[in-house]
Image (tube, rainbow, N blue to C red; front, side, top):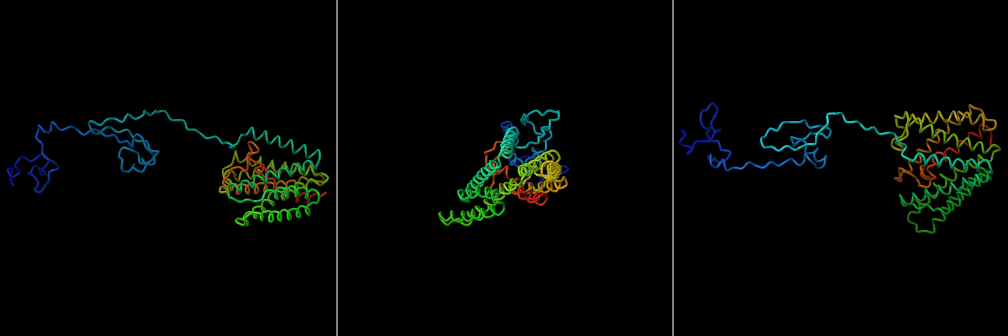
Length: 378
């Protein structure tokens, strides 16, 4: 094939290698323009890549494999590259400082108003100590009031979060009567009052439609056992001759256990104790609770409880630390099931009454039983 077969001189680039002439069958990439037409051609305007200057980071990450100018991962820093194409308009990126950026460190926090928590705690302590050592009956009244408020918080939360309507009226009346019966008649009176309260819950709920009856009465019986029945052991501790000191020992050991767990766990805690239930609790905190409670138990049994011996206090402190931790975890399990942080808002910095009774309630029967075994019931 000679050159005259093209009609016009073939454009550059259609010659074969080594200048051997045009390649047969080659299709031109576009029309051939003469010099005059080429001068009239305007360059394509530059369209900036909008994904590089804004938009969702997740979208940018997904498009990273197809976008040459952006990083493939969020934490990559795109390297500065020269503009390879003439006429490309710079994007005017923000200037980056060569100085290393300071790394912000998150400080540990208790997540509550510490000042309010301390103030409320001191106020509650004054009320408890004053009623405990002035007139025993006044302290029993304080326990009964705490039980009624705790029942109100629990039943209200059950209704709000789960639609469970445990009858509050028979629970409140029966709970207060249970505490008084435990103080007056001991364990026998507490059991009888518990049975009558459960029966009252069953009957009271019959005045409403039957839908949800089983779950309502089940929650009511659980609430009667969990709050007032366990609280009766505090009233039974008070009946001994040194009852105020036994109750004071029980309260001190529980508070010291919680304080030791918080202090040691906050400072040294690394290994989670039960992350699915209470992510803030650590094994180191549990060791702190046991250590603090055992030391406090030895001192209290030796100097506060009649006929008490220091080694009995070690065992008592160990048991209190275990029961207080389990009680706290049990309360956390209930709150997680309900999807709440606190049972109430009555006590600033603490939550509700039930948030303060979580460790005390299951510890009361443990402390009562061990003191009866060690030094008797009178």
